[in-house]
Every structure is written in C-alpha cells, then in structure tokens.
Image (cartoon, rainbow, N blue to C red; front, side):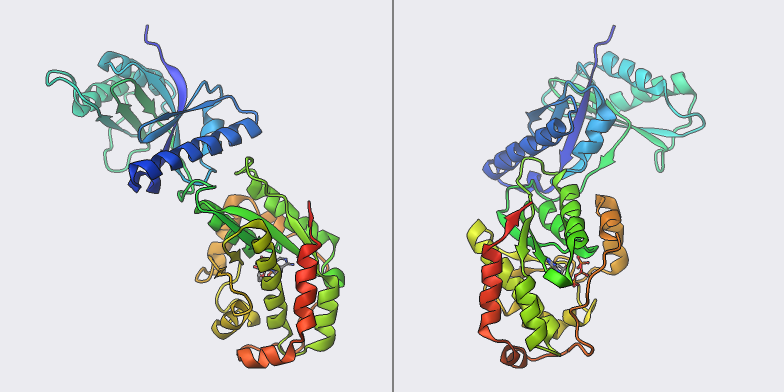
Length: 386
Ligand SMILES: Nc1ncnc2c1ncn2[C@@H]1O[C@H](COP(=O)(O)OP(=O)(O)OP(=O)(O)O)[C@@H](O)[C@H]1O
C-alpha cells in the first residue's frame, strides 16, 4: 500500500535569482505571508520550507489552498499535489490514483524530473516518464500528446520525497509583500487606483492606502467604494495593516474651487500629492502611487503629469502609465476590485468647464495660494483610519 499525503507545492520566480541570503529572507517572508492568508481564511495547511520550494502540508482542501496561495505576491504557481516516497513504484501507484479521474477522451503527457544525488543504477527522470506513462495508459486508455496535452502529470522526484500533480494555479509573480518598503497609494475607488495599488503590492511593497474625502464634491458612497476595493486587496495580505487613511479635505477643495479656474484639476492633483507626501513622511513610506495613465484624462497629458509630480519631493509612481484601459479593466476583474469600482456614486464635479491640457508649471503655481497647501497638510494630519 502506497502512502501519500495531500500537499500544495508553491513555485516562485524572481526570488530564485537572488543571492542566498536575500533569497532566504524573501522565502521566509513568503512563507509567513502564505500562512497568514491560509489562517485568515480558516484553511487547514502548514507552510513548510524546502530549498527552492515552498510546500504546504496538512491540507484538507488542496484546490482551495492552492487557489489561495496563487493570490499571494511572489507566487508564480501553486499546485495541489500528492506527496509520496521517492520510489518509482510509489510514484507510479500515485499516478494511477490520479488517473482515476482522468477526463474521458482527453490527451495527456508526463513531465517528470528527478533531482538530488543518486547512484548510477537508480531510476532517472525518463524512467519515471516511461513507467508513469504506461500506468496512465493502462488505467485510462488515453492518448499521449506531448505538444498540447489536455492534462499533464507533473512529477518531481527529490531526494526526500516525490510530488505528483495534475493541476496548476497561476499566481501573480513579483516579490513577497513586505520586502520592498512602504508606499502611500492614493486610492479613489475608481477602476485604476486599486489596480495601481495592487501592482506595488505585487512587487513587494507594503501599502499605506489613502482616500481623500473631497467634502461636498465626494460623498459617503464614494468613500465606501474606496474602502471596499482596499478590503478586497487586503485579503491577499492579512498580516499587514491596510486600513484606509481617510483624509478630510472638504475645506481644501472648497477653497480650490473658489480660487482657481482653468488649472484647477492640476492644482487638485498637486494638493493630493501634497497630502500623500505628508502621510508618507509620517508613515515612513518611500513614494506616492497613483492610477494615472498617460493621456487618459486632461490632467494626465504628458505635460500635466510633469507639472503635478513637481509638487512634491517624493517620487510619484504611476505603474499604469502605459497600460491601455482594456488591460486595466481585465486586471481589475482578475483581482476582484472591478465590481466595487464601478458602483455608481453621485458626486459633484470639481472640474472647470475648460480644463487645461498643457499647463506650464509657472502658470499653475501662479494661480495657487500657499494657504491651499497648508490646508492640504492640515487635512493629512487630521486623517482617520477605517
Ligand atoms: N478622492 C481621492 N482619494 C485618493 N486618491 C485619489 C482621489 N481621487 C483621485 N485620486 C488619485 O488620483 C488618480 C487620478 O485621479 P482620477 O480623477 O483620474 O481618478 P478616478 O478616475 O476617480 O479613479 P481611478 O484613477 O482610480 O480610476 C487616481 O488614480 C488616484 O490615484
């Protein structure tokens, strides 16, 4: 009787290219983040570490655990697998087991590897492929298709243990969250800013989410939408505090609308960046992130992006700068923020009738009174966490 256990294998990409000390640190962080997601979702599973692999043991629902792992930054793929002794007969027996639910009239391939030290007379990766292949044919009668198989039996035989899997969940790649410092993300709850926030998370940045309440020009439903999109993202990082910093900026916006006309939207953006920079200074973040894309709106022409970023000394990161809207929407759907982002919210227009598309920094600055920036900083300091 072959003994096997349900596990989930987790593969990562870029972490593997790091020096051994960086890699050890990143792997440890990834393990911690994965365990936090499983615990947060009350899924059975203990994250265990092995060289160049992260493995989840003691799982009772391998598919759900693998799907959850595949949501975590740094993960390239997750596979529900059966683990057995690194013995050819055992591996073949496990393949037979998995072949029991081989879908009818579908083709297959075996992709087998053997790693680690072994004697010359021991079995090789090709032996695994040949023996496992015959077993699957024997069980199912299914035809082999090495180029475009419907199902691949992936077998990894290591020194200590072998793993057999037929299913793969693709992850987001990137780096483990918490390895690249903190970034302030300006989150409006629209379609773009949650995607931009996610891009920074995906590259390992801890996020300080900031929603700017525009007073009469914003509204409770606007804010609820922003908070809900951040909550969706936070499910992927429950061991980080992603409560939203809500900045009460009604007075600042009223003053802006009273005093500035054509260049108002650029000044609004500059005030938002000022708020972002103030929060970044207080929270120890290295940058401010927005969902802006070149040419998407009048305030986002190339010239205008330069003018708005000049308001602060912190770098303004715009990960969606070159993305087309269709790609942004596809990612928003993928990460689960799209539905909340598209809830209709009523809000008054801050935009003037003829917004400037090609402003000079000097012209924008001339129209701005310094008390506007004081109001921005004050609003940032009066923020609340929700
Ligand atoms: N009320 C707000 N609070 C925080 N950040 C905001 C707010 N409004 C806009 N931003 C930031 O400024 C960027 C550009 O603003 P814009 O008016 O184009 O946003 P939007 O269309 O309302 O939302 P999104 O860009 O998220 O789709 C946003 O991507 C976001 O980073």
